[in-house]
Length: 407
Image (cartoon, rainbow, N blue to C red):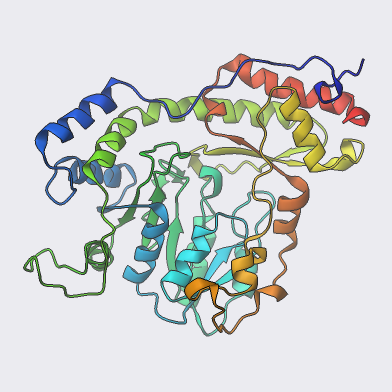
């Protein structure tokens, strides 16, 4: 009989990893309070302003503006930060589509930049090469909860007079040199969607230290109203992008246990980095002492097939799953190869919109390698496991390495 489970052998593990979401009596208690209060909308409730205040302080920000999703948060933050029609915004090519689609929604043009394979964050040197007279902003993604190089980004922004809007959707509590991400640039955007480390099913928040950005973001989120105007006075363009009190109640409960769970994730990420880094053919992401807190939304490593009998990434992942390790290939294609960008299908019913860029000509080699050959993910709920759970991951990879010909 084969040694590997994918060929009929005995799997390394058969039990499940920790489930997500984690919740308790606090969520039920807070939700009950909202229901009994009769104040279900955020405009008149108590939980939303309380959560905004606590989360903003946690991220070293003066302001927090809750939004109905992380995607909407990015769009509104861009507009509030003065991104105008036709402005180019530099974005990494390896990220969730919302990073780029929100730029389109804001009237801007996303310009895709390759990633640094050692960090999976935007390559700042390549970002500089992509700057044109139309470039207005750069949007680093603190991917997987790992802060981007904010020193290099700040220097780049200062040199070319660019606005920085941080996509921190996966980076609650992440810190760069002791400073929380999300308000290092003009604004930061966080997500509370179901898979996120702090979640309310959906939801998001914008953080900023800029008075004008905060004012405009709150207005764009609330139908263009002004906080000192009449209810039916609308000073700016905006829609209803408000969060509900139900979501804020859940988020407050999630927030109160977040540091405890983050510590567990960080310990397990560090352990996996140390142990998997010893396996030839498994390349963990580069350590950077300037990262003083990692949010640990994903654990990512680079799979090198030449050390696994040239078996494909897809075959490796399937073999890992059969061993009882729920392993993800991550993003299957680069953002610029998504059909919506290839066809520039940004108009009604997918009609093509003319832009001064043809996304068919974009090529980011490190992003392509990540998508097709190298990137392997473990989700954040797995990082909530115990040491035995982590050892089963390590054992499974070592097993596949030893019997790579059978994959």
